[in-house]
Amino acid sequence: MKYILVTGGVISGIGKGIIASSVGTILKSCGLHVTAIKIDPYINIDAGTFSPYEHGEVFVLDDGGEVDLDLGNYERFLDIRLTKDNNLTTGKIYQSVINKERRGDYLGKTVQVVPHITDAIQEWVMKQAKVPVDDDGMEPQVCVIELGGTVGDIESMPFIEAFRQFQFTVKRENFCNIHVSLVPQPSATGEQKTKPTQNSVRELRGLGLSPDLIMCRCTTPLENSVKEKISMFCHVEPEQVICVHDVSSIYRVPLLLEDQGVVNYFCRRLDLPIESRPRKMLTKWKEMSDRSDRLLEQCSIALVGKYTKFSDSYASVIKALEHSALAISHKLEVKYIDSADLEPSTLQEEPVKYHEAWQKLCSADGILVPGGFGVRGTEGKIQAISWARKQKKPFLGVCLGMQLAVCEFARNTLGWAGKSFCFALNSRCTAAPVIDMPEHNPGQMGGTMRLGKRRTIFKTKSSILRKLYGDTDYVEERHRHRFEVNPELKQHFEDKGLHFVGQDVEGERMEVIELEDHPYFVGVQYHPEFTSRPIKPSPPYFGLLLAAAGKLHSYLQRGCRLSPRDTYSDRSGSSSPDSEIAEFKLPSISQD
View 1: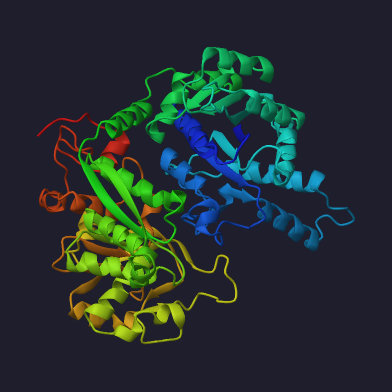
View 2: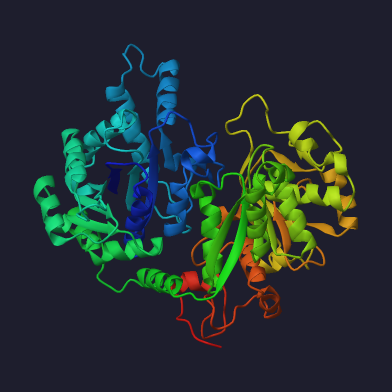
């Protein structure tokens, strides 16, 4: 097993996650099996109780693990399936060590950070690195480990010390360290400054880790003199200083690393069993990047949510929209709308903000209401859903978005004015359209929702979403919710045209809604964005983009095949994303 540790310096949020994913991608393109581990030094057991404004969205895995959004990057870039133990936190490590101490495993010993905590970290990494993450069930050959935060943070010290010991445990030829640092370029002088990187590397080396590659984040490509200066002061060869400047698309980052000889360096440094042959997977990334750069047609989606001030709050949602837009050769424009701005109370208090929000909503080609928690902003979301339903605008509701679509229908079509918010204010209101789930324990917040991969059975052959999924009988998608649509009221909605076309295995939970006589009005209880991939977009999001671009009807008429000028078509006429994944290629654009 080869281990690649990615650390960061100068500032947090520097791009370690994308760089770690890109390193994994170029190694996987060489035919290696790659896994990834994200280490977060916070004391939380997992990311489940975070506000999206703290660390961005909470990503959900197949096994129900609520983890950092970087694991979403790993899954999308590497097309792998991770587990909750691939996200290691200080809280998990201390919890496991304290549990061992209570059981008597350390009987007679004083339990300390060194060696007990550091040993536990090393054991966790070595054990988790061997867990298969690919569909073929093969044990990984390379493990990319991202250490969150910044070198020098007090909370990450036990992890740095653990890896200082780890490099000797697994031997030098099986371990290397990538240090990601910032090279600022003050606008006053326009000169690239190396001092922050020098100080960061000096601190890292003082803690016992010497970087093998220094990846410099900068706005423009590094000048040769700057590269040589970093090389001289940071005790590395010039070829070990890698420039990661700002690029048009994150899909270009693996190509950027490949062009600078990162694979060749790993081959020598880690003695990797790589054949020198053309790498189809990277060709696919290049074609995908080129395609995203030269898109001309545009499609706008209004994202009506609560956390719109911080785009990472909806990271997977945005990625799923981008994947779908790329598949139909459209440039995506996301119009972020704070749902509270659509509410009548805003008209009284801030009329300019109110009218700007409604102007954005009305000018969008499609409307998306993603998941969320709490009562704030729900009235604005219901207003947006009502407008989409009445104006026949393409609409997708995810999780809370689906539940509010049901509430809006109950209020405005069935005339149940008083019951729309019973679920938010009084979970014991049995006549409410949306109710609390029996499994949820209100006494404890962490890990008590309906989480992870669950099966949804399609109940009708005519469902649009069923066709988009490839006319399958069932789908398995990831869930994260505390409330559900009240199954006892199902018939009232279906009599008026809102159909529950997808239900769980027992038929007790409503999973998918579709409205008749509407181009695309779909709600899903699960979170399809978590399984979207660059060359295999999530069907609900794909349907929204097709409808917003006016292509859904023709797509369904062709038997769910795109026209030759779109992404997933090849000369044989097949348009299955699965076939493209097998071949790892995207054909060039050709006109009809």
